[in-house]
Amino acid sequence: MDPRAETAIVIVIAIIAVLTIIWLLARRQRTTRLRGRFGQEYGRIMRELGTRRAEAVLLDREKHVYKLSIRGSAADELEQFVTEWRTVETRFVDDPQEAVSQADAWSTASCRRGDTR
Image 1 (spheres, rainbow, N blue to C red):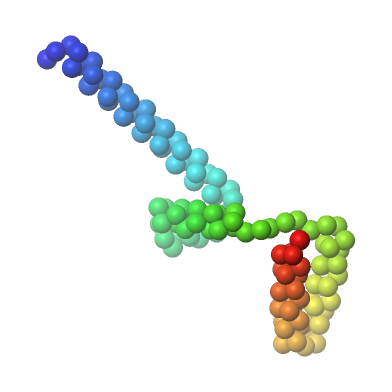
Image 2 (image 1 turned 180 degrees about the vertical axis):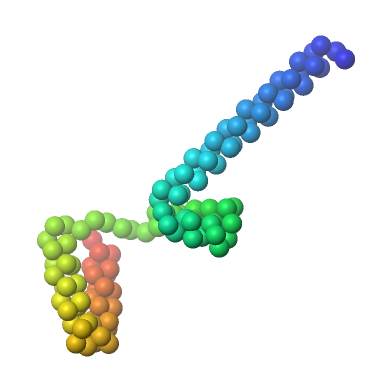
């Protein structure tokens, strides 16, 4: 065989090996990142769907959340949130159905307040 052909074959094999290693490392890094981001949910979905499908689902969730307009709350908003939530919780003991209804209305209103800013 021609020495040039042998050299070309060795170079092609080396390139394929390097690309495979890069792909495996990127996949491992993605798995580690998803496991860290989703915690126990990662394990649960892995058991239900298997590795490939689970990671595809989690990546879709990540993209969906990224598109949302989520903002942090100011300290006074957070304090009001905690106060209102505790009020709803205490009502739950006496009237669970009404408390759930109030919690639903309150959480919907809280989300809307966040959308307007």
